[in-house]
Length: 142
Ligand SMILES: [Zn+2]
Image 1 (tube, helix red, strand yellow):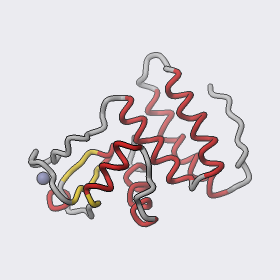
Image 2 (cartoon, protein in one colour; image 1 turned 135 degrees about the vertical axis):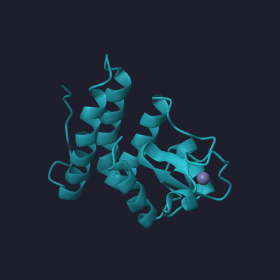
Image 3 (cartoon, protein in one colour; image 1 turned 90 degrees about the vertical axis):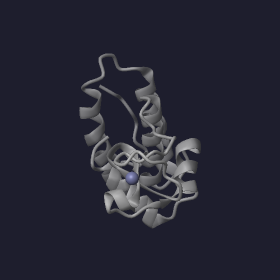
Image 4 (spheres, helix red, strand yellow; image 1 turned 180 degrees about the vertical axis):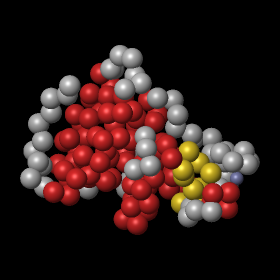
């Protein structure tokens, strides 16, 4: 379906991350009636970003763009469970939906870090263990 060149095809870590993401991506697109150019451009630009950037960071940034494009990026930060506003720490569940750490019994992120990620589509403010945490949320499904 999509023809892309992979300059990093022999880099195992990059290839592994890409394959994990694509495995989630294709079933996600099954429900999309007509494939918009957005998705092709997103993947195409991701291939190039993976060449230069840490693959998990590049994929997380692309994923935030995907959620925003599909109108399901929650930037008003109300808790999925109790519906109260989230003031300090934000935990994220599948599809990056915000929830209180205490409501989800999971580890939270500093709110300003999530906000920067969501608004700027940049993982610059996040450390490697936070990237790992986001990566595991992403693997739960798009
Ligand atoms: Zn809550």
